[in-house]
Every structure is written in C-alpha cells, then in structure tokens.
View (cartoon, rainbow, N blue to C red):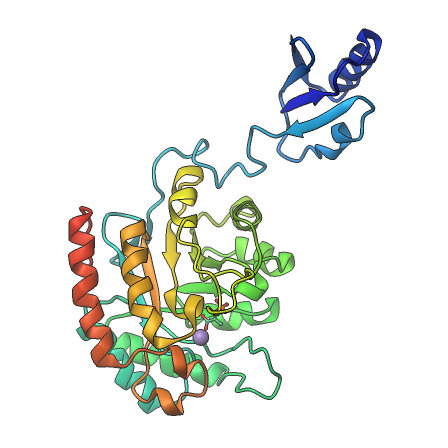
Length: 338
Ligand code: PEP
Ligand code: MN
C-alpha cells in the first residue's frame, strides 16, 4: 500500500501516522520529497480495509498495490487454469463453444438444437430451465422437466450441459443433470449461492454482474475458490453504461485484463451483451480475437416464437456460418475451435 501524505505536514504528524501504520502490522518505508512525503506500507493483508488509513489526519491518498483476491490471482497460480470436464477442456488452446437456446422450451426444440450444436463441432449445450426474468409475467422456465430433457438431448449427441442455478435450494437438483453451473449476472454477488457452489466440485461459470467492476467479479470468483471449488470460469456478458444505442456495453477489454490478473478461463457471451441478432456475430468474432477461452451463444430454430430472448438468437444457418469465421480468426491467433 502506498500512503501519500498531505503537503507540508509536521514531522510529528508523520511520526504519528507511521506509528499507527506499524500498529496495524505494516513495515514502513518513508520517502521524503520537497513537498510530499510518501510512505510505502509492506505486508497488507487481503482483507485490510484501506479506509482505516484514508481517514487518518494528514493522509492525502492511499493506493493498494496488491489485489484483494488471492486464489484467483495470476501471482498465486502462474499458469492458465484449464478446466477439464470429460473430454472437454476450457482454458487451453482450444476455444470451447457453449451453444443452445436461452430457455429449454420443449423436447422437440432442445433435441433439434442439440443436433445442430453437435454437428457444428461444439461440445457444450446451453439452456435455462430456471430463468431469471426481469418481469414476473415472463416465462420462468420448465424447471426439472427442462433439466431432464436437456440432459437426454446432450447425452444423445455427446454434449456437456451448462444451465443456470438461481438459488441455493436448486443446487442439489441441478447437480443431478448439469456438467457446469451457470451463475447469472444478477446473482454474481449472491454470496450465499456462490459460497455453497464453492462446496460443490461441479465447475461454475460466473457471469459478470450488470454493473460489477472486474475486481468485484474476481472477488466473487474468490468466494467459490476459497470454499474449495477450483473449477471456476468467468463470463463477460456486457455491463451497464451510459450508452443507449446498445443494450449493454460488451467489455471485451475485460478479457486481456482478466488474463493478466487471473489464471481463470474467460468465456464471452455476445448474445446477452448485445441483445440483438445482427450484433452477435461481429461481437463473437471480436471476442475470439480478444482472447476469449470460450464463447456462449444463443441459437433458436424458430426465434420469432422463442419463449425468451428470441431477438438475440441466431438462426442455425447463420450460426454455422459464424463458426466457420470464428475458426479462421482462432487460427490467425494460433488457437483452434474443434
Ligand atoms: C442467460 O444466459 O440466459 C442469462 C439470463 O444470462 P445473464 O445472466 O447474462 O443475463
Ligand atoms: Mn438468454
């Protein structure tokens, strides 16, 4: 931690601040300039509240130099984490595809789409059975029936399943059917949910909260890791900004930032980031170029009649064209999509 002191404070005041910092357990290195004195405080604990220093008389500014997360950080784990689920890897050189409808709607729909997903070479089927909807009057998902048919469709076509868990009481049930838990944007800071998912060994994909900073997002990942589940991946799905011409701002710069700060794989979701079909393919291409380790994309065979997120669902034919383009972009940056 770097503590910048106010201009022209007395030696006595400086000594008082130094003493207080030492009482907090820090080792202090002082550097004195013409006007400013700066204190380097070594030994900051991850949970230290820097406001305790900010409020000291004579302190102008405080900067943390170590991250408040540990298990999620690149300094704790130097190499990229690779999450292995059966024969699928997320976080290695190959870019994984998580494809499917927003919601599981019927047996016919999910089997039709699962076949398209498998034919495209993707390995992971997405679909929600418990849906977080902005309106209580919107379709809320098929529940366990949806999980059952999704599992059957995935097994028939040799796919993994990723589906959303919205609350603690659903964990045991969803565990029976899924290979990856999805934590939705609205639940990124549902601490009781993410703590309990830390007790599971099923991998978790943690979506970025609607207005979460990258640090807050990594701190939520830290909850899952600290509770014992090492299989965590992050998913950028767009954040709220002042822009009104787009649904969300797809923060692709988060991808290289996370890769620098953390060893965890990063998934990119251009579907929820943009909310409109015509923006999904360009942003999917950009996400691969930016270094995403996996993509989550919504598709539908009849988007006009989809029970949720129809306007952002790609038609199967457009999706298949996109996969061909993504492979070329992956190849250009030394990666693969198989
Ligand atoms: C979803 O994946 O269907 C979903 C609801 O995503 P998000 O939490 O990103 O809105
Ligand atoms: Mn959706």
